[in-house]
Image (tube, rainbow over all chains, first blue to last red; front, side, top):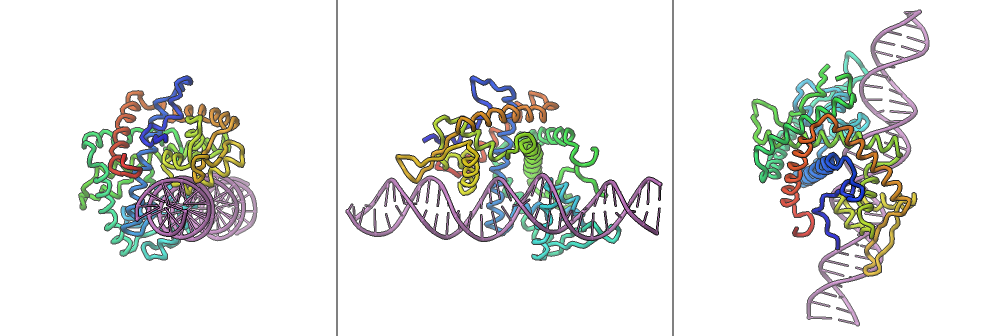
Length: 171
Length: 171
DNA sequence: CGGTAATGATTGAGATATAAAAGAGTTGGC
DNA sequence: GCCAACTCTTTTATATCTCAATCATTACCG
């Protein structure tokens, strides 16, 4: 039995005979992916079990909680870094459940303005509290300094990635 | 126009009046998620455009490339950190396309042993080379030292996450 | 031995993701 | 003012993904 769960999954990088360049880069990517997968998996299970909610739905509410005036769908799409076509059905369900509202703008009737309802805000706040605790639990065996250091480094990495990907406007 | 693409998406953490604890933890999670989303998005587009392939399919081949003797489906599932029910249809398509084979084990006929074909290995190697280059391109504005440091820190983080999540056996 | 429990894989339902095309509404050049 | 080009959202097609239920096989207990 090959029980390799703890391996570094370096089949992409650790072929000795191939001495693939980019070893460090590939490692970084695999570590990022592994950590993100582990964390999102745990969060997803917790949201499901404790709130019968999903992570994408929570993240959408989170964006709206920050914006009392509401957001247009395109902004939501950019901030959540998912396609607009994906937002629509999630919005539709959240509206049916009474957590948000959606109304066309008066200035530009192509645009849909999305707002949190009172109930949606309450639901979000309740979940956000737990969300923070879950993350705190997951990271409790990591030094605060390490957390800060990773935040710094990942912030720089994120900036590099965004700069080289003129996805949005110019920026 | 709220053009907040460059914001830190801290609606979960930056409410001043709430002074939410766990700020650093939430930030770390959001940075991890953002970086992973940006990288996987870029890789996905590249795989699609240049090889008409998807990232999960590539990652599956990668695991097999590392194991000449093949792997059982359950091992694949653990290593890729996705559910077994998800692996089956991906395997089925890869088999139809001739990149892998699947055969029940003689020792235990419940078990399916999956192997790369010669064609599958060639396809994988071709893609893996590009995969490394794409990552190298994405990270070219990051210092080597920073990359190494992140790898170290994320390795520790991954260990912590796995230890606290007795997902597999006892570990 | 025989029957129940456990294990590995598949199937099916529900949610989320992209990409591409279609629909609706604005805008700008003439 | 009118129509082509553009923008924002939705729709459609395809691909992952989880979870739960099911099927097939193996293991175990008396």
